[in-house]
Image (cartoon, rainbow, N blue to C red):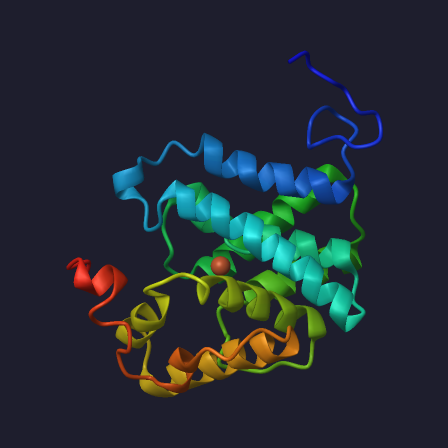
Length: 208
Ligand SMILES: [Fe+2]
């Protein structure tokens, strides 16, 4: 098949990207170009690519439903884990991602100080999913992030494994609330902070 150029949509190619597309491509390039080897990464690059993309699209959906700016939502969602994508490490990644995102946004000269402050703040706070803030964008990134993670098999029990019980309850409430908002079917796993996936998926295969 010959290459067909469509002048009406970039497909993320070339130098005429919108600023939202530019930040999405910058994020994906960060993952693809990261030199940290797969076995040294906290997450596989496959997950990083899937998660960055999925959270961005969920962010757009939530922004439309909530009457928020869909482009700003997409940008904060796409970059929310940029430190992990750069270094392969997850420790304190919300705060460190915020610093990296701020630098990348400044460099483009396509964002106002107020926009950068808002994007930075949403990324900085995104790991505090047990806290409900008054900022709708901060809440949007937390919701999009946790909803995507909760769509994978094994993640329920992984949360139970790694998070204190009270925090876990708040995470699961957040997942249930977003699922309800999007009129998704009830998933009873999120009613329990016990291991409920044992015997299936990861645990059955001896992953943990
Ligand atoms: Fe995330």
